[in-house]
Image (cartoon, rainbow, N blue to C red; front, side):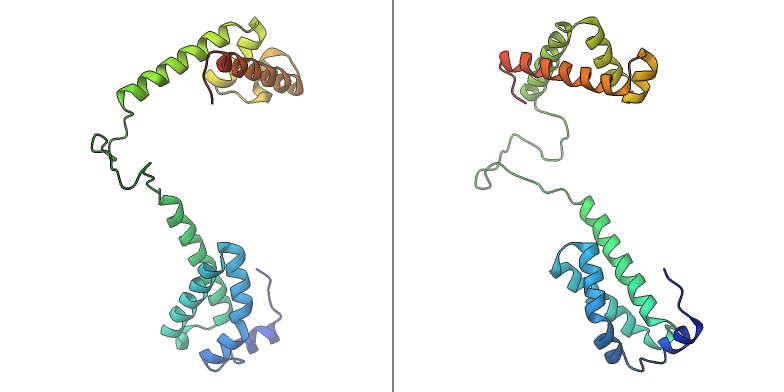
Length: 185
């Protein structure tokens, strides 16, 4: 946040004697700021309105209303983003026909889904076995041990670009093998 020269800082609060004057001067720039943070106009408008409502409740106690408003808009936008990340939409395949056999609170997959997953894992393992030794080793280091390209490079002596190239082709080969066996990603 940029520092204001002392003469401007001392006149900032004095320039706005009423909240209406402050609103007239700062509504548009605050709305632009909120729009950049929130990404949608209706939400930005709500955030700015909320900030002014909060300021109105304590207008006489706020020494630097401009800074206070920008900080409040910033915090409200962040709070909205945090809250939005926590929401998980529940999608039903057919809203008219609920599935009584599925408990939406049960995180475990259905038995047939679990079997299909195990079959898929088995096919991936078989596909990996068709690769040459070096490609299998790179796949193991990347996906079983979770190493980065740089760490794989250090361990194998290959340069980082070559590790990426070999992994790309190994994964492509696995995908082709899976497609031949009827597994579609």
